[in-house]
Image (cartoon, rainbow, N blue to C red):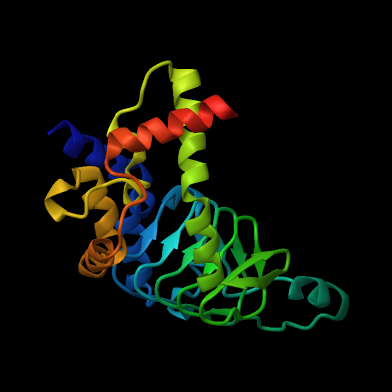
Length: 242
């Protein structure tokens, strides 16, 4: 009841920017073509051009981090008008494919097409097209590696990052962590049985709407450790060696 009340108050104060769903629906009403399960993490800190929302096309399962700006027009022609008196229009469609992540404080300029399965790094300026399946970053943003190459890098980093998470928690919180702390790292230790998954782990499997695919992949792999206790023991040994 309290949560519902808070949501109503938030809606009254912030209108269509009160949450991701409201922002997406607002853009759709203006003609934007937006797919399923699109999430705008910070609606009040995100600017998606409202002058021509019908020039925005976003696919399914796109995650938009805080501070992102999308501009379908420019007002740089004001300088030309000031010097020459001419009014020169400016617009271009922005297209973002399926299954993309747009990092914090990224700016996407008019006319840009971002392909499917792309990752755009934080603080990027995207002023040229990004092809399918690439990680891109920078000012201006450029393709750096393929998503497949990036996946291999992330797989190799899992244990090291879990170890760092453990070290920071133990040294600063002062106690051994519960299993819930590692709900993004459960592939390292969890028994390959759907019934063994915690609710937090299941929620991660449901992300981007492909639970069955994730489950199938999960069941066909083997964990690095035989259960959570063995996993913790390895993390403790890593911390003691460092």
